[in-house]
Length: 255
Image 1 (cartoon, rainbow, N blue to C red):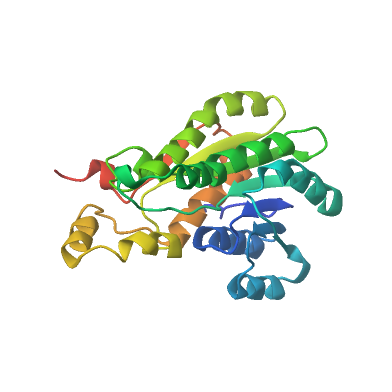
Image 2: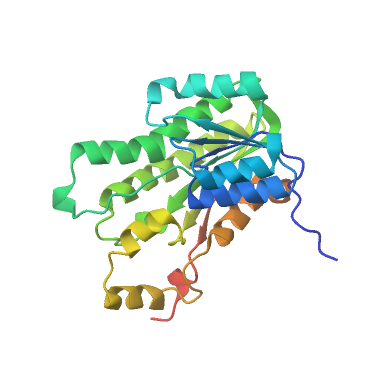
């Protein structure tokens, strides 16, 4: 008999963007397995507050601005001081701003890079400090298929995701010596409010072509959260420093 995914040992899994589609999905899966979660977001939605009410003290919600890079180290230190050492970290916070390359503005590019790359780098640096993490902590970052193909209109977003992919290998080498694993998931579109922001702008023909290019369909939040929770868990203890792609068969479709 095949065992179900074992993630019930994890305490204090720190999740950014916990009000968003993937962040909320990961939090709910962890909580249903008995883990405790600390959720961070700029605004705590009514939906994730309902989850917190359901799981009582298992889900702690904190409002914070991850764009405030000067305070991210103290944010992690404060979380550890108040709730205990970090057992896992998932950076789900993010946004996209779709625009033609010639309309990219420095401010938009900086904001995308700050949230998708700088924020997790600084938070991981703080988590890696002695006494801030458990001996078997696991980190999962989220990249995007847009960093690997001609995703027109997503140049700044793709560049930010490419930056965090470049961070992975050297970070994994350092963190492994401290007992911390770090991996990334590279997703094709997942049905979240963020993805809807650009998918809803497609014409009927554009949407039809998009759907045709994903033989296994557009990803559901559960598809993303299942993979992330597997990488967080001890079930994946032999995996480190890897970018794992889940793209609905897009890269191997018949052409």
